[in-house]
Length: 298
Image (cartoon, rainbow, N blue to C red):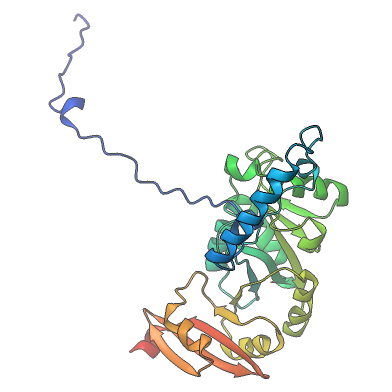
């Protein structure tokens, strides 16, 4: 029997299919330059200052023609933190949910509310490090090539701390998300670093002391993962100078409680499955947010 092939003409051709544009959103964030985010004192005053500067520039323009500009020789550009978050992970916390948010911050370290500091209870360190490595992917080229991240790599090579990086066969060493052990951000450079520093604690009281090593990092919020909510309030009370605490949650809409906090009012409400509360603990006003369980909701 002779071999033969039957060519079947497809009923649906490429011309009949509508090719939709990609809808993938660009989630990569880059830090702002410090000079670009300064608040102007007023339009009128700015115009007067510009007028005075223009007159002074015209008078000294000819004198500076033969001189080399010194501004370009000054220090490197300064970048601003984007409301960094500190994550505190207890052994009784939901490690799976915490890892989901932690990996997001590792891949997009300059994003708003991204985790910059991680406090981990000692019993969880080994498991967390092992699971994080398997979830790491190469950094976006815009992050890997950013001056902040490159500067951090040079500092890490100089200080030689213990680090947690992506698997060598999959992630290159100059484009890897990174956890750096026991070194505060201030030793890695001024402004955002592009990595997450990790500190180990044994007891809740010790956690409230270790985070102080990160001063003057402008921590904007704290994400605490611990199913024992009663003990969480003890930790919140001992973390001075921090006012926003998200218990067993991460990125949450702050609008339902923002106004009451600004007016220094006591307030409590529920919004889309979250309990919002502003109260005073040890003389300091704080915001506490946590998801409401189905039993409480019913």
